[in-house]
Image (cartoon, rainbow, N blue to C red; front, side, top):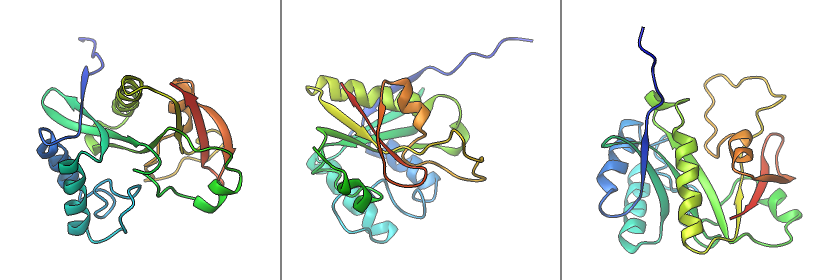
Length: 191
């Protein structure tokens, strides 16, 4: 029996040239979590799926979005959103986050998404690697992520960790800074 090898992914930024690829993945997945369009961390109020699509499209037109798309050949299969705190001010567990805040990071990693048929195949890892490369190319700095702890936790049936699992970020050198919810941590790394 032939040995299967892991897919080789490429990454590209979300911009005008990749909007259709991004939109195809979002639309194939019901707008992502009922119509988010990866807008939940942006400053706009969360609206309908159509409002969110229009707002995200406008961010792309203005160049006010940082997102790395992951491609399996010519098909977009996932992404990692990142940006400066002013670009991505809306984080989960804000009150707990701000309680022990000493300094804002230079960059935030907001959310990760992998298309349902590509999960557990390294897409999120490729997305985070691509985002960290882009951050490094932009001058680097202190990067924060807000993943969920999976160790010591019962498997979550049907759950999808939109901010990623803690162990993924640990692979890239992120360390726990503080806990902001029962299973959510602020993790930081200098890039």
